[in-house]
View 1 (cartoon, rainbow, N blue to C red):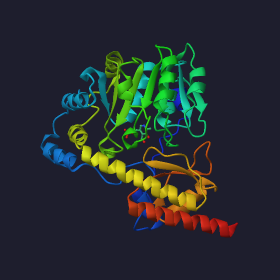
View 2: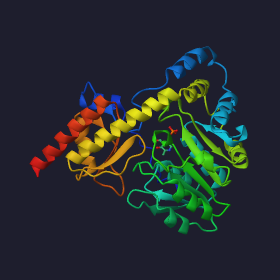
View 3: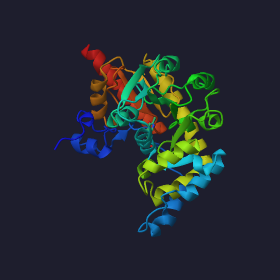
View 4: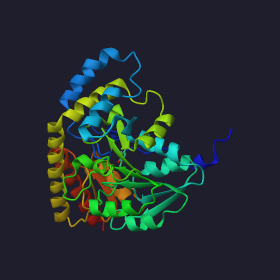
Length: 365
Ligand SMILES: Cc1ncc(COP(=O)(O)O)c(C=O)c1O
């Protein structure tokens, strides 16, 4: 039996190394994972209450159309319910976009490097992937624009970008959107947007009225802290959402995720708390990276890409032995690691461990 030839070489998605694996393999009691940009402050108490309240219902199928959650999102963001689609995480929205819009040979333009799932799903559809190198860790929107051809169907913009954490500002984005042909769908992945409080950072949802060929992706996995419940969403033009619904798996979001997401949306206090803590964590990390003479990309999400000036796989292993999991091995950044912002205590432990690792390397020479 032979699978489709275009999937034979595909890697299996490599998530951040699980804490329990590291504990087992290295015999460690305490392991801190700063590798998957999760929320170290957990999730909203209101979401917890909603989950508990829903537990009695889990023997019945969820509402495949997420009616109540759709209404809550529509109200919060001032859009129509038929502009919204939910997925098993925003990863599922990415998959649905590729399924809906990419046929073999179609072209799709994305940054290099950016979130891996854009390329992965495009490869499954046997599309032609056009990768445009980042410029100083940022999307090079004019270079991306220049790569759009008659065959281009989807263009991906990740804002803030994973893994570099950089952002494109509203003026840059709208200049780009003004020039993208109207039959090319621009996917604006805003998985980390709730962490950003930078003047000039665009709110993709506000741009939807002007740009019918735009879809905005958001998730409950990051600031809302619901990563294991797997729920994210897309907001776009009703026609786009209709086509995506036609390829959507039935019941792709579950009851617990739906009620938790709805309760989380209403808990602005929790979101504001996490945003402030995250900003303070970034400033703390910056101050120590500066002290250690390490450079980093400006960070707008809940993670920082820092240049350790050592092969990142070595730094990763050395940190792992000290009970810290980070993300190494970036194609264009062989000495960078991506570290998620933790609690103040986790950040301190990370810096202490990193300093030891750097000192040991300096002694070895
Ligand atoms: C930029 C970006 N988009 C989308 C996702 C997918 O998140 P989820 O499927 O948990 O919503 C991630 C996860 O790390 C991400 O970094």
